[in-house]
Image (cartoon, rainbow, N blue to C red; front, side, top):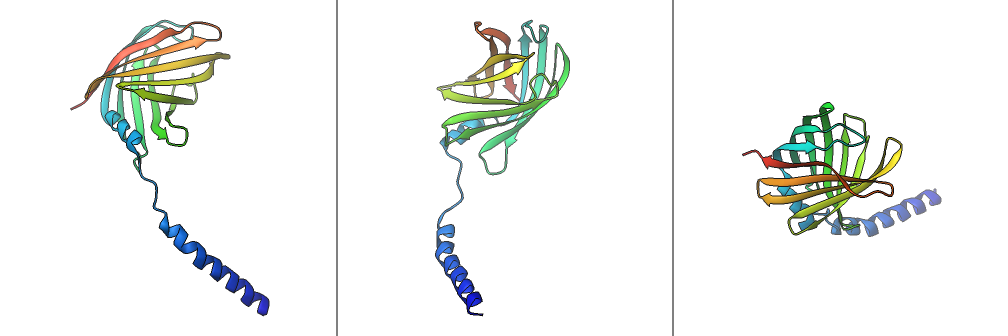
Amino acid sequence: MSRINLRTLALAGAALVLAPAAHAQEPPKPGPEHQKLAYFTGTWTSEAEVKANPFMPGGKYTATDDCQWFKGGFALKCDSKGSGPMGPAESAYFMGYSAEDRVYTFYGIDSMGMVPTTVSRGSLQGDTWVYTDESKMGGKLVKSRYTVKQLTPTSYSFKWETQAEGGSWSAVMEGKSTKAK
């Protein structure tokens, strides 16, 4: 019986010591870097030209993206529907900021299956966002660079480039997005 009382007393004492510390810390709040993502909230319509490349034919690409704050305000959740040289496509992606790594993040998947998951890291310099990643396409390592230049509060241009192992950067897609009113 005394063992139970000692255990109970020890647990109660630990709870009393730890409880104030647990309550003293407030939940984290989004910082200024997270707030910069607000630019992308809303519904955007994109038109682009896809350049013929080893992974897809060239042609027109159109899409509508709807981006809203994910609960907590640390990231945007976006849903996209579009059509391009390979037919209709859908994607879902999250845009956030890693305070720990001090980089913007992009996590995406699409219905085309070419790249099952995209995980990119980005930076913002003035009005230009640049995201980079590496993935395998057709069994080969390919680097990607996606550049977004804010033109106005309701429009931006974008360019997607790839670089095969040992090669130079090549444009895959260039276009413009406009925010719905």
